[in-house]
Image (cartoon, rainbow, N blue to C red; front, side):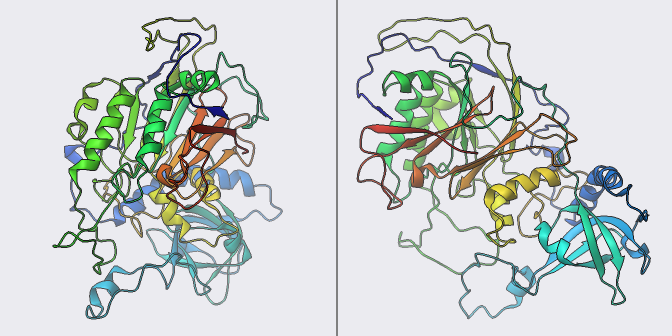
Length: 522
């Protein structure tokens, strides 16, 4: 923990590492919707059919490898309705969760609107839930202990091995999903037992910084805490260790909820009106929070590249993928080449630099240094958290957790399987952009209630020595947490900011004028 000095008096010039954005590949396409595909005339059923087609081969290949060595080789059935009774077989389809507590738009339309709407449920699951497997031919009910152990949600593509019972249900013996997709980037030089507490040479460390939930404009917005964050990232405060770490941050990602959503009535007072399921609040955004955000972004972008994504509380469309903010929203910050407005979700391919750039300090000193370490390219997948929070409602916790749900999306090869059932998304006709055709090196999830991280590898050992770093990024306005991910080693560091007496969440922050820097456990 280092004391922050209000006046920067560096013993040596601050050198900022730089990274570059690599063009996307066919497996990491943009989530931006072009004019050709901006149509809402198509049925949402197309997404499920397309998803099944895109993932069927991967699931079938893994299922054959998994079950080919069984004593009684099971029969592969191409369609759900072709299952043979009393014979061990397996079939591929899409999971549908029949949940009585899940919101139903038809019931919402037909209800008596003179009765106040009950508050939304925190969880959808109950003992009466049923798991269905369906394809283009029909559906069948899955039963058995193995089904409950898998913790499935609507929209997942699975292969089910089992026997049809006399009652018409399918008694499941085993389940198989697509598993991790291949990694596109070349393998970095790291050890197999890589973890967050590993040691690495300071000269080769290069970090990407991630924050979420600035919530500028909320009643509990902590302007002093945000200002401390800006000054830390620009190298204006902190001791030598803090400035050394800040100089190794080559890029900042803001993962949603930068502005706060407020609802107003005609008299200007906050008002809670009953709304139909999924309907967006009639929000009135004051221009003052956006002006404050633009000023902070201007200060940050003048020091390092910044990527900003929309979130659930931001003035952006409700359906996924959320489209980028208009650059004109952010005033002078938009004039910088390093300022990027990204969709939500977003793919980024970042290449570490092998030579840090020269930087001019407050005293006007410039310097540069040369590194002998070769560049490393990392693929980064960023979301603002809506899919994970939606899937969280389907599952009992414990044993499920937000981190385990994020890890499951990688093994399912789909980051938003519950769309369009309980998560709004664009009605794509001939593709499902949320299908993972490659596994990212770093998977960042913003808008989370607490911090979390985990290294994920292939369960069956088909991809040896490769890991995906999952990081859950909590609300900065509530926790004061900035997350740093080492692009070379996938090490994770957490920097805690706080101003004494200004905790929005009611908890204790670090003493005024100090930043807590801790290394987390994976």
